[in-house]
Image (cartoon, rainbow, N blue to C red):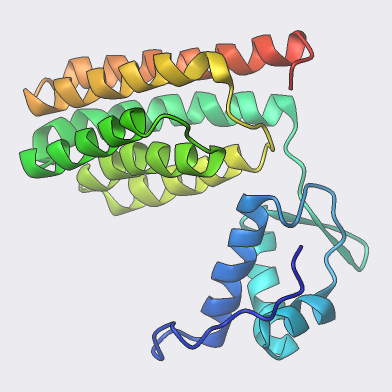
Length: 223
């Protein structure tokens, strides 16, 4: 991880130092700068972010509560996500995100549907897509649908589960890229015509396919 002190001056002054620390640390975790199993060095992290240890400690406590970190005695580590956990998470996401897609078909403005579609099509047109760009586009679709459900708690839990999925540490599965894009566009088509049941079923199929691809990749030793 880079030792560069982060520039926090661009963040809104209304945001607490603990919230700043939390956002930066969570970014480290999701980007892999703090890999699974890594020992958390509170003092070093505080120095890197140009913060005192108190907000960093509070942020670490919050991340521990969200299960991004795990404790062994007095030592804190980046949590590892097992194969069973990732399958369990995807099973829960299947239930929640299909419901979110059904509700989004009722609530999402057509302008938002068009915006999400344009984002996917722009990614296709760009040619090479990095893992980070892929995750960002995937987030836009899944979180966009969750937020359009109108259920704040549903959206919050889906967001947390998606971040737990990302903590599994698996890079994008190439065989799923084209299929995943087609599935995203099909879901948006169903939302655009207000077909909630079809949107929900397509989301279930999409997440089942992601689960099966992960299992296949693991069994084949390609991850």
